[in-house]
Amino acid sequence: MNQFPYSFDNKRYHTYNYFLKNKYHQKVAKVALNADFTCPNRDGTKGYGGCIFCSASGSGDYAGDIHDSLEQQFAKISSMMQSKWPQCAFIAYFQANTNTYGPLDKIQKMIEPFLEKENVKGIALATRPDCLDEQTVQYLSQIQSKKDIYIELGLQTIHEQTSKLINRGHTYQEFLDGLALLRKYHLDVCVHIINGLPNETKEMMLETAKTVGQLDIQAVKIHMLYVIKNTRLEKMYSQHEFSLLSRQEYIDLVVEQLRYIPEHIVIERLTGDGKADDLIAPLWSVKKVTIINDIDKKMKELDIYQGDLVKKQVPV
Image 1 (cartoon, one colour):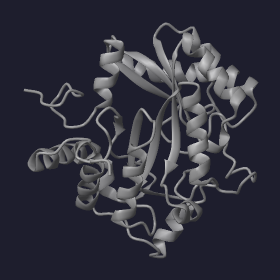
Image 2 (tube, one colour):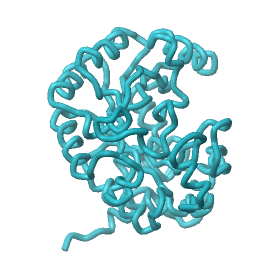
Image 3 (cartoon, helix red, strand yellow):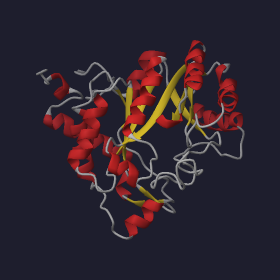
């Protein structure tokens, strides 16, 4: 018997699968696309090289081939998905780099072919909080009459010293300002955080999750830091400048973080992994299914649920 209201399969957190099936009443999958954007901490506006953990593809390692048009990328990936799930519909997910970092006409040109596709239920844009302006956000709000719009907003950590170390190029206050602008126009926001960033303690990572859980957001993605070839993080790792979390440390941390995230917030991801050919460490991160299974087991063993510590907080 399912004891948690936001899961079809007895998980103790608000699953993305539950959210999608409850909203669209069918299988829906994300198609990751590369629209050839860049980032302000890559092109010199705020810095060079991007975030220290970011690959050359700008966190779009699983996105479509940049040499193909967006229509071609979508056709190739969606057809592969439909061979597995014949009745599947899609969310067009502009994943690589910062997809609102450019003039509005470029953003419109990227999005508008997908507004007319019957098998596209929504559009998701990965972006940064310092790359949002009122004109762009207003446009995104207006096209919600045609498709659901989801904004994936990179934060990674609330701690300024870590943000500087990883070359984020924006402050936590800029994140709050970007989030406020998106919510002013009623756009749904999924916030990304990363566990295991250099020099962060367990307490700092918990503080990030607790703080994010108190914000006006609709979803969270939790990632494990992983080291990819040809990144600045690889050089730091090879010089033993920081240690990665062990598999068990990561599982225990995520289980605890989930307790501070209110149950209405969708958990879109509980871990992440780099492409196997480029992954330096941790090698355990490639076995995502087993990590998620062990998170489930730990929550059951401790008899805890997403948000159960939020409910117990009493206002002073």
